[in-house]
Amino acid sequence: MHNPSQSDYELRQRLRGALLQEASVFGNLLAISSLRDPVRGGYKHDLTRDRPDRGARILRRLHREVFLEWLNLSLEEQEKDIRLWMASRGLRGDRSIAVVLALESEAYRLIPATSSKPERKLFVSDLRVVIELITE
Image 1 (tube, rainbow, N blue to C red):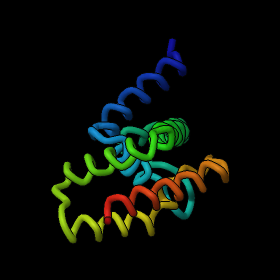
Image 2: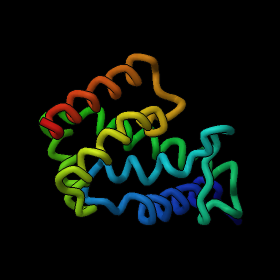
Image 3: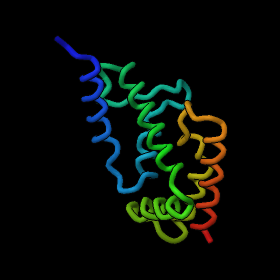
Image 4: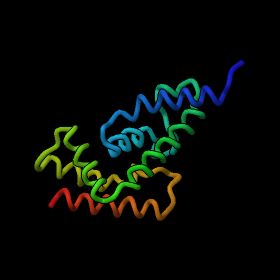
């Protein structure tokens, strides 16, 4: 007999393994947020092709978990985390500043739709402070 909760668990584990490979929490947030359709709000990944509804639900939860993980870091930890992400991409000098400023303008895409207004405000505020620290 097929156990739906076990299959959801297995799918979740496979998605975590495929998506959350970055050394930085911010890199993982970028990876998972890129799977959300900004118009429809749904999530898609090749691993969820056979179970799109369950897959979207699992991806939505993973997005929220990674988002909250980053939000719960101190500002100092957030700065170090973004610097780690930048270093992993070879971003230095003027190029790094341009990328970081682009992130600020796209911050809303990183925020899960299920986030509360205070969480959204805190994320944008923290990101702005971290960007100021990085671009000084």
